[in-house]
Length: 162
Picture: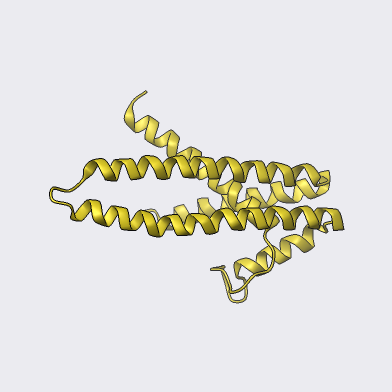
């Protein structure tokens, strides 16, 4: 497979995974501190998530499942935030080495890619667990949200295109 095609497929895979992860995070996230970057006044991420939860009209059992998955994902993402700081320090050290340590930079990329893949599978599994506890009408709401997310991204791409 040619390098440009492989790169394109890789990017497409992560974009698709990103859409699923974003949708999953919207579905299982709960209230927390601060406001996300949302379109328009008063439409931060937490407000959108709360609106989705209301729209899904979750049962108590579903709410408990969502809370458990949210906590699991929150832990995973917090661990990755700590990894980013460590990765930045390794990158800086490799760049400042005399000569620049290309091997260390490539090793860092390989390690980070492995962590991202592991996390992506965890997010997908969490989303699938949450999906399994939803009723068909609730699943339809999430599919509709995914459609809207894709449309919004396509619109943004068109607006940002040269």
